[in-house]
Image: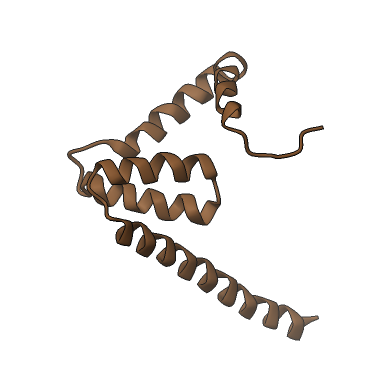
Length: 110
């Protein structure tokens, strides 16, 4: 039994996806690769800052590492990383609060 759940060596296992679910993994890889594309309506810096916020809110340590690194390469400051993280936290809190209103309604209906 492992003593931890996140290990950088796990990423070496991504090649298993190619073997076990090739077409699906290829589609995912292409879609994931679109994050770093240039020439869209959103410039690379802002694409990566959005990715940082999503990575933080989805709590993916690998995504956080990749997108913080890419955001820094695109010119992001540490303050921008902090703000992207806090915006993600605020939206997460907002989602919990608004789902709380659902809990109120369900309580009243019970």
